[in-house]
Length: 308
Image 1 (cartoon, rainbow, N blue to C red):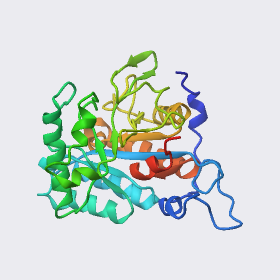
Image 2 (cartoon, helix red, strand yellow):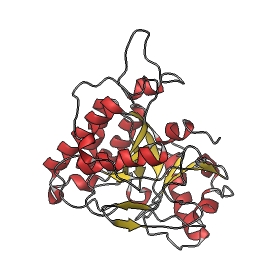
Image 3 (cartoon, helix red, strand yellow):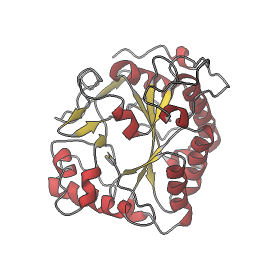
Image 4 (cartoon, rainbow, N blue to C red):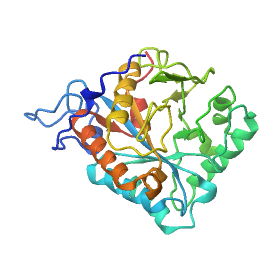
């Protein structure tokens, strides 16, 4: 896979002309008559669809950072899909309010399992237990959400047991709401290739809007970028000083798959990893998104790409 020239993606504009509300206002993403929308934004003739994920929302752990990140997206009117680890959620008012605020702003809550364990090679029953526990929790108070997206936890391993586990609705009726799986697929970057073969996690040149994103009733929306990437896919724990890598990853995924998904983790913004620099990078990426892309929730993103 050829990574586009990084320099192409580092010029940022300051005027925000597309909001999540505009993206969702009508089927064609149109703007009021007479308005000229920048290329790629929601009201343009050829919108570039993207989604933003914030994984690992939980009580106490980097919740203060999660609130700052969440508030930035709300202020920019860009929807955020938040993955919640339910076994460690619900006792802290701050973490609950983050989720409630994002829902009120038009964002989405995703199932990030109950315990956030590594599920690669796990049995269907093991995966089902933790996905269904989380799904049942989210459907109750205080969120009352039937999550449509399952974000695979901890290295995002997908294998042949993932989809059947998602489709088991025998004990938890709200499992029927799950229509999307977002995990990790094969990518090559800076000479490093990390491949996860499997029937539900195809190579980047095979998962595309032309081949169809939905299989057996479940849409596949693999994540192709993280905010703080360096040399390896999902190496997001180093200090990052600019938006070069994140934007290059996003535009590479857009080029290969027809859409882009950027992943954030609240603890990326802790002092350990250089919070001030990371917040600046996030601000730059948000500004770029407002001027060049059409941000959607994961559910809205899949809806833009029905199977041919």
